[in-house]
Length: 477
Ligand code: CTP
Image (cartoon, rainbow, N blue to C red):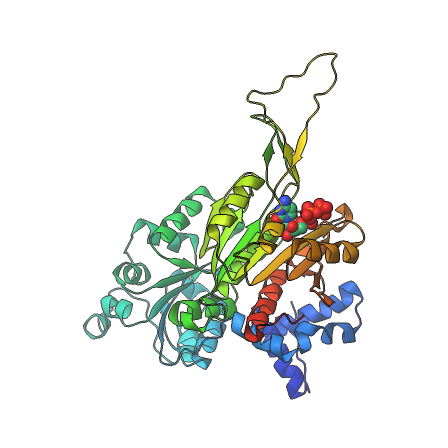
């Protein structure tokens, strides 16, 4: 892809671009490229993009800077183990960003990493020597692997290849990187990067479970295109700003804007049984609710995610409670109270069968289909809106196929919540189960429309608004 150079940007625009890029975990070039492609794809007028609230509001910009937890790393020592993957080049940027924030980086290159980045370039950017040999004649007396592993506040493995993760999970120690990882008594953060087929391979799935169990922290991988042409899926290494944010979360957790706040999120569909093999359900994937739970946790909140049956992974750093039915979800939400924030994203089935058959209902030849008697499920959001322990900020979603504003405002009123995030779920829009969403946020006396974004960005945007809300302690939309 050809690179772009933009000259003569005034300071204010440059700063806004920098903040926007930081917020989205992209480089400034990537951010500018994305803005240009938005113009092309959606035929948007430049003013519409540049005048959007997220771009121009200083309060949002501050919140965004905070959510990425741009940390002060003054004097912090990061031992960066660079594995052998194409994403190794991003480590040069990561090193630069850590150093910009006052951190020190001591790089360790695996043998395979040296096929992707040279010790010379890594060392020059880190301002330190690069370590790569397990038995270095000079080093073992001077600074051996034990000292390397201990003289750091945090170990970061980026990119963590499938092989490196397998070694870590298996407890191997046959080169400098794996030996340091075995010998350390410091926290370890891993940024995996590999082909999606490798990431989803049962061996890698097992290894990451083991590593999580061992207390290893993960950042990424992200979904997107792979370096191999035509390949896409989950496996791209997290962007340097995301890794930086995760580093901040471990090294200086106090920085997080929602630290000390407790949040409940519901997500996914509910399944209402008809008989032992059939159920009433809907097309919700849980992607939006899970992304919101993750974004809240990234911003420092303690998050309890009550999830209906979904086929996606539970986010890290979030306590996930799995339920099947609306009544189970209601019970778990009730148990999770009190909370400062509740975001009800689940597409709760409005009805369940009055009586669930104990045995599979049989077809009765000639007698026509069985009829189902339905009864209403509890409205969890409405109950919270009128609860003695009502969360300070209560947010609901409105899935609509027509008269969006009218229905959303009515729901806000009826359910007693502070904000409703309304989205059009007509089948033509592909929101249900899809990856992007167009949101209108309604509060008691105003509304705003967000541009179409992927569900992670919707989650971050919402969390930014939540941070703003708690900064001012009034509902400002
Ligand atoms: N909700 C809930 N419990 C229910 C139904 C909905 O907590 N039994 C919550 C959803 O999580 C969402 C909001 O209420 O935050 C609105 O959900 P939606 O399905 O759009 O509205 P309904 O109340 O089901 O109304 P309708 O189906 O008439 O649009």
